[in-house]
Amino acid sequence: MADTKPVERPLSPHLQIYRPQLTSITSILTRITGNGLIVAVLLIVWWLLAASTSDAYFAVANAVVTSWFGKLIFTLSLWAVWYHYLAGLRHFYFDAGKGMDIPTAEKLGWGLIIGSVVLTVITLLLV
Image 1 (tube, helix red, strand yellow):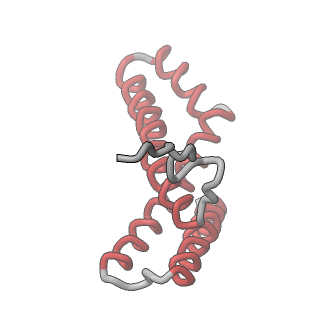
Image 2 (cartoon, helix red, strand yellow):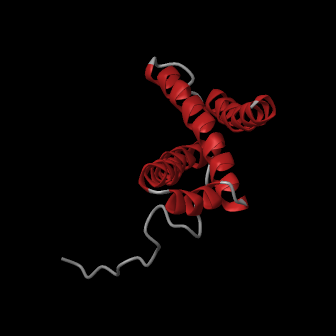
């Protein structure tokens, strides 16, 4: 056999040459929001446990929940709930075999992002 010289090239897909598409970003965001909701759930469970433990412990937990940090966590988790919900609807649409072409998938991705922000603002204004 003839000696062959190995070609030196990056593994595919390599981060230096890969341009993320909207569909991949929305897919990654779906996973991040799903895991991020765990933080809000843990904060709520901690607050409820503190309420059942003692007045002093509840005062500490309530101070954290009603602080800027708690409000930020709950606002972001509200957005995550709407985002995750709309992503699930989009996934059902994809499961039906529809919207699989690139232009439709990108429109659904933008609808997912914009819709989750709009629904979050509407919820914050109503509640």
